[in-house]
Length: 240
Image 1 (cartoon, rainbow, N blue to C red):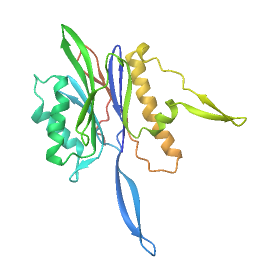
Image 2: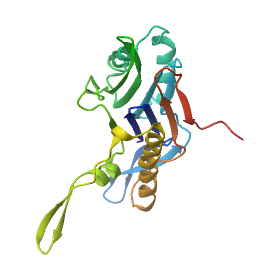
Image 3: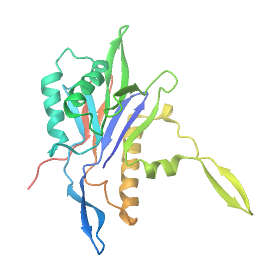
Image 4: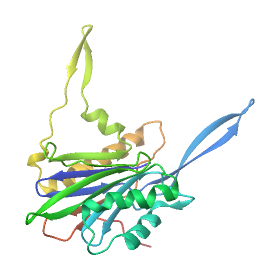
């Protein structure tokens, strides 16, 4: 599994993800035999955020492979074969659905797509969530939700931190609502910091919990800003 996050604020859009590739397999153990699931770390250098034609960003979570081949290879093939210099950001969700859907029996793969499109002479931000198994794509930065964050994959830790809870005090359940996060006042640096916070908090929480460590490795961060080429704030490199 993974944690990918997209933060969209007035100055631009940030796409971030961890780099862990986990494999789950089953064994039969005991008498009588029972099925047991095991999760191991296969790699901490897996790509989940992709720069597209120096214009757009794509991130992915869910199934790590198709027919035993890592998903990153398919995404690179998709970018090379399906995206041209004239492709607009709002065309990419359907292209992803066509490419990864029927030909591969709609695997459990999910995407975020972000970029800018010139509309009435102005660079307008677009961010989409694409659900391949449900065959849907949704624009998540809407007039009613212009600024915010959206994440996919291992979302439990952040959901627990940011969701309302109830506390039992003197045999009475008291609502405890989280303090709001003013995404509309975020700078791009704030958006980068929030992305790191979300992924790092999940990694460290998993570290101390008795559960599979399915989020980890380096954090890749891609920034998109109107009128400029996207740029990497953090990108793992090959090394000896």
